[in-house]
Each structure stands twice: as structure tokens, then as C-alpha cells.
Figure 1 (cartoon, rainbow, N blue to C red):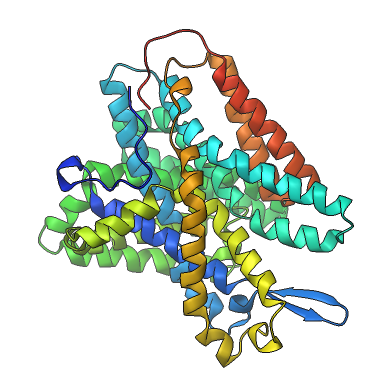
Figure 2 (cartoon, rainbow, N blue to C red):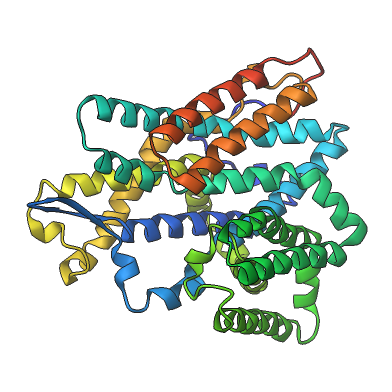
Length: 433
């Protein structure tokens, strides 16, 4: 049975498994830090005589759309999640455990950090309403900070499918990827032909499964072998070029928005093409990342952020919003976005926000480890499936409708019930999570 690790104890080099690719860890943390930076640049508020005006300064830049073709890195998140997911699943199988055991462990690691987040957001909405805070202010706050919850819904869905999709990968490999790609294209075509945007939500399943499936090839070394062949680097560059060419054609045809962030919810095939390009790009830079990760200082940064990644992801926007609120009490020069002064102060603001969210995430990181009471046995199939459905529904409703009073209250109710379902299980042999 796996024991809980101390929150601040850094691993020794000897403790790092030989088969662990530190380039994957570095890339995951790098993506997370980039997400924090992007969100910092997309939050601003100015006090006016008529009220508080919220804005997204980064989106107002003339070059914003173009930069999203590189800055939309969520596909890479799922690729790396696919890598770690199938690696964990194969370890589960090697220990003689079941798919239920795997899903149980994955669900706990995503569900437990979400419970305090939903609790605080529900309390903010209910308490704020009771105190007479205008609804548009409450909705502006919780609606904004709740946007990352789409990831919880999508990642939970994809990770719970790993026992099935890994079998597809082992039996069919490229054909499974082609099948998922075909499903994405069909959904995109139907959406384009009918103009019914709701149909595109079907790709909430297919797009993220496709991108996660790319991570399976990363673990199996398919891209590494390609890179090692004569002309392999040229082939990887060609994959990137072709992916972006197809993406450009999709945008010109009107299938996809030129703003890659706009293609995220509901997901479009543009993200699958970005995923292919990002997989090839990661394979190009992976040797550099591995060499960089030999430095203990960088290992420490990656471990500190990575060991509390879900807490950092969920809580960085609340921290940014609080800092933005404090600016409302300061002179106007600190508030007005897009000015030279505003851009100059973004670096110290980023470092401050990152420091505060890491401090906040340190006690919250306990929710990312599994307490002893959850580490013996696995719930029966029905309560486990119900817990997955409740957690997914709570996060997906926020994705579609926003984190408002009804979805916040439903979220804390659903996730609490899900946790209670997971605590009720038959006696069984110890389950390693």
C-alpha cells in the first residue's frame, strides 16, 4: 500500500524510477505555468462611476489570435496525461488489479481537490447574495474562476476510458487513432452543415480521447524511434508543417475559428491537429528537456509545482481575481489594462500570483494524496460509476453554463455525495493508488 508523501520533501535522484521520463514532468509543469501566465494577462478590472468593468486585456491585442496557434497548449496537457495514464494502467495490470481499481484511483485524485473548490465557490455565491453583493459581480467572479473546471470534466472522462482505449491501442494502434479522427471529422462536418453548435459537444469525447491516444504512442516510443532514424528530425518538422497546413485550411473553410482558444469548448478538430503538431514538437525538444532536468534546482521546481498541480490549476484564478480586486483600491494607473505601465508590472504580478498560489496549494495538496481510509479495497461497480457520473456532471455543467449559484451548489452537493459513495465499499485487499 502506498503511503502519503511529505508535502515538502523533495525526491532524491535515486528515488526517481529509471523508466520515468523527466521531460514529461518538465513539460507538464511548463504548460501549467504558461496557463497561469495567460490567465493573469486575461484578467483586469477598472472601477468606474457606473460600477466595476471587467476586461480581458490579452484578447484585445492585435496579435492575440495568431499567438493562440502556439499558446493553446491544452492538447499537449492531454498527450502527457495519456502518457502517464497508460503507464499507470499498465502498472495496475502488472499488480493484478482491475480496471475499477484504476478508475477509482484516478477519480480520487481529481475529485478530492475539486471538493474544497466547489465548497468555497458555493459559499461565495450564497454568502455574497445574503450580503447584498450584486449578482453580476458574483457571477463575474465565480464565472471567471470556474472556467478551468472544463478540464476536470474532460480529463476525468478521458482517464476513465484508459483501460478501454489502451486495449484499442494495443490491438489496433494507428487504426484506433484513425477511427477517433474520423469521428471528429464527422461531428465537425455535421456541425458545419447544420449550424447546430450543440452537436459539437460530442467531440468533448472524441477530441480528447484522440489527443490522449497520442500520448500512448509517446510512451511506446514510436516518435522517439522516428526521431532516431536518418532524417527523423525532418520527418517531425514535416508532421508539424502538415498539421498546421490542415489547420489553416480548416480555418479558411470556416470549420474552425482562427482563435484556437475559441475551438476549445465545445472542442473542434482543430485541437486534434494541434495535438499532432505538439506531439512532434515535444519529441523534438524532449532530449533538451531531459538534459535540463539533470539540474537538481530544476527538478525541485518541477516537483514543488507538479506535486500540487491540480491545486495550482484550480486555485490560480481565484488568487489572480483577489489580486485584481486589491488593485481596485489603488490609484487608477495600477488598474487600467494595456498601458505600458500595466505590461511592465505583469512580471512582478506573475511572480507574486505564483508565489501566493503555491503557498495556498501547499496545505491544499493534501487533497491530492490518498488518505489511508481510501487505500483499502475498491468500491463496487455501481457506486463507482455513480461517483464518476456525479463528478463529471458537476464539472461539465460548469463548462456549459458557467460557475453560477445553481451550478456551484450542485457542484459541492454532487462531489460530496461522490466522496461518500467512494468511502462505502466492501472489504478487500489493499489497493495501491
